[in-house]
Length: 403
Ligand SMILES: Cc1cc2nc3c(=O)[nH]c(=O)nc-3n(C[C@H](O)[C@H](O)[C@H](O)COP(=O)(O)OP(=O)(O)OC[C@H]3O[C@@H](n4cnc5c(N)ncnc54)[C@H](O)[C@@H]3O)c2cc1C
Image (cartoon, rainbow, N blue to C red; front, side, top):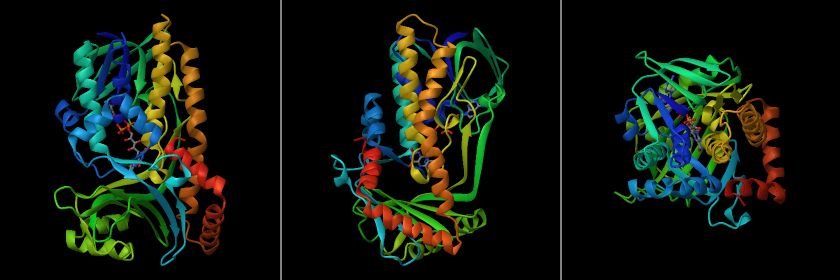
């Protein structure tokens, strides 16, 4: 078959792009290696995604926000304030409060599997209504070919599809990107991140924590209370060398709860495991190009962030906004949606919006996991200076709240 666009990868970014483009006169194919059943009921993967107010707006516009609320009425957790701490037993914290913005909260926290589910439901509903989305699921893309006038892919079963434009949305290790010859800078942080939900005795007051302890980095993402039991609930995020994460994964639930309680120095009282545990190796990826002949990268395929500044999917949505705006505009004017000038414009805009924070995040992640005494002193000093510099705090708060 022949399409205007083929979106390769139906993760949250690919699905949001499909939703954003559906209903506007374009024919779109969506290719995903997972089977349709996995897309329609994605499994819990431990990730609670911190969303900026701008991303929340995009999700509202795409119809996902309301759907997420319908899937689980405790799903949208406000992130009121944030604090950053350094070292064990340190009473000092850099505090970023919502009062620095004009909003009641800095952002929101939503489970990744609910975003995926809502994005799939919305894309499918729109595709049914407009007859413009075609799904090829349950098999990976086996071969990619681009040429000046279009592109062709071959699926694992040997079938072929064509399009005027390919979208690589197939993760930070995108094989589509590699197939057309785009290399990438990769940074392996040598750490693994363990994420899970915990209940705890003391209320978190919807404050997110980032805690650079000695030998470990902890984060606490405040969630709404468990609707079934009323227990206070948060997502715990532990960043450690892989062998230590393996040891934590091997603990039984009770021992794991005790270990996490101790790591958080009882600041939230006793903590208990409330979900499955999931581990992610930390590798940042920034491609040398975000576009090629008849191809554009979105989502993690365009920018693979370290999660410490919580911007991966926020950047994914920004890319969806930028690219869909350019494509719909060109289509409405009867222009070629795969024209080199359009793709170059997308690359310029998305690089400008993402590269500075990608590099800053890399530096922060390195400084705040370094264990040498000078590095510890430097980060303590940096936090104390940042606490006093109101414009800096307002900038951080504003970038989250979108004000
Ligand atoms: C622990 C953790 C915490 C995070 N926290 C935050 C946060 O707080 N805020 C934030 O904004 N972001 C956060 N992120 C980042 C966020 O999860 C990602 O940016 C987002 O999930 C990327 O979505 P994607 O659709 O680009 O890629 P993916 O989710 O990787 O989806 C890619 C899709 O492509 C499919 N695919 C791959 N190869 C092929 C192939 N050859 N053929 C067909 N299909 C293929 C895959 O099956 C998959 O469905 C976090 C990430 C992690 C790991």
